[in-house]
Image (cartoon, rainbow, N blue to C red):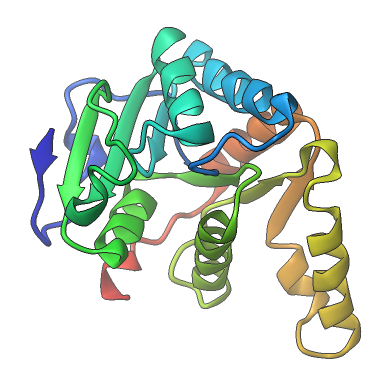
Length: 210
């Protein structure tokens, strides 16, 4: 467990460099359908088996804890980032490879984004969607060029995607904005695409300026 200040950590300075580093947003609850937990476990296992690093919100509850435990069990690294005020509320995961305790939610999201070279949203509630939309907005504004994925397992995000397309139709968004995210119900396919895209992207490091 590590307290951190406003100095941005640099993942390249870590002693064991992972094959990739992916930020996963997901629910602090498991949901009512057991398939959501199975999905989180499959994602974590995929990350670990491919020698990757999971970056997430540092909690032990719900899908957050499941994806972290699965990554660790499969041999991957896990970086958890959690605000001090949520250490007890979200049951901070002390088994993380590295657990960073920060002061604010903004610090949490900024540091998670800096550690990651791609982003993936699993099923979750308003917190998951807020994080997904924020990192998508940051890409639209040019603060980063990192790939973003929406794992639409079981059609969970079908209605959201329909709504977003309606915003394009209404003229509040361009179709080019939709092209900045990848959506699939197949976790293997989506994870592979995100990792390959992150290797090709010319990643800007402007998030510290937000």
